[in-house]
Image (cartoon, rainbow, N blue to C red; front, side, top):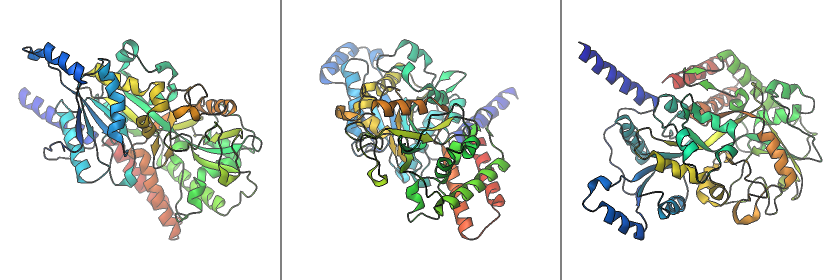
Length: 480
C-alpha cells in the first residue's frame, strides 16, 4: 500500500511540474538539425583532447548544451563570438546550441520536447531567453520564470559568483533588478537587460530631481509632475495619434509594481484595485487624446534604453540625447521622468535573462558563459548583447551601472551619455525599487486593455464584468 501511495504521489508531482512550466501532454520530439548547431573545440585543442581521452572513456566530457531564445539575423555568429574565446582559453569544451524559432509548429515542438527533457532529469544546461510576447501568438519557454525558480528547477549560482568570476563585475550590476532572480537559495535567474517607461524633456524646460519612494498617487497629485503622470499613464504619444488611436496603451504593470507572490501563488492586488486602475487609465487617456495638455514643453516618451546596432534613443554619436521630431537638439542636457509605482519608486521590466538547469553536470561551464556575457566588453561591443537589449516594445538598459558613461561607450567608442545626462540617468536608476519579468502575467495586462478598448469603443460603460473576467484569468495563470 505504501509503495502504491508513493508511486501515486510521484505521478501527481510530475503532472504538477508539467503544468508549472506550461507543458501540455506531447509526443516525444526530435531535435531539428536546422536549429541545433555544434561548436567543436579549436583544432589545436581537439588534438590535446583526443590524446587525453584515448583509451579512457571516462575522460570524454559531454558538450555544454545552450538553449537560445533570442531573435537575430546573425545569431549564430554572435553566439560564436561569446563562446569561442572561452574555448580557446581552455575554459569551455564542446558546445551545442539550440536556437528556438520565432513561431509555428517547430517552436512549439521544440519547447514541448525541452520541457519533457527537464522533467525527466535532462534538458539543456543553459538558457538565454528573451521573454518577448510575439504579439500573443507564442508563449515563452518558461511562461513564469519566477515560478520555475520556486519549483527548484534552476541551479543556484551564488557559489560560482563568489568563487569563479573572471569577467563580470557582479557588484556593479544593478542590484535592485538582480533581486528579481533570487529566492532563499540565492541567485538563480540572471537578468541580462531591463527597461522602464519614461518621459524625456530638456533640462532647460523642466526641472526634476527624483524623489525617493514617490508613489503613483503622489506623482498624479504633484503640481509639477501631474502632466507628466498623465502622459505616462496614457502611454506613448506615437500610439495616440496613429491607426491604433482607439487602443488604451497603458502602464498598469509599472504602476502596480510587484504583481504577484510566485512562491505562494497569489496576486498582490485585488480585483477592486485593478478595476480602479483600469477606469483611471481610460479617463487619463481620454484627457490626453483630447489634447488638454497643450502647454507641455517639447517631450519624447519611450522606454529607457539603448540599442547598439542602431542609433540609440538615448544619444547621438557625440554622446547627447536628442529627438529632432520634438525639437530636442544634439547637445541638450536632458531630464528623465519615469512612471512611479503605487508602492513607491520605479518598476523595471526584465526583458532578457539567463538561467542554468538544475539537472546540469556542467554548472561551472554554464556559469562561465553567463559571466562572460555580463562583462563590460560584451555589453559595450557584442551584437549578441545588443539583441538582449531590444524587443518590439523598445530598447533596454545594460546591467553594468558604468556602461553608457564616457568610460564605457557603446560600440566603436562613439556612443555614450554626456556627464550631465549620465548623472541624471544614474539618479533615476537609483530609485528602482522593484523588478518584474515580462512573463505571461505581465502581458495579460495588454490583453485586458485591448478588450477594455474594444468595450469602450462600443459604448460599454460598466467595465467591472470584463475586469473581473481578466482578474480570474490572472489568478488561474499564477496558480497553474
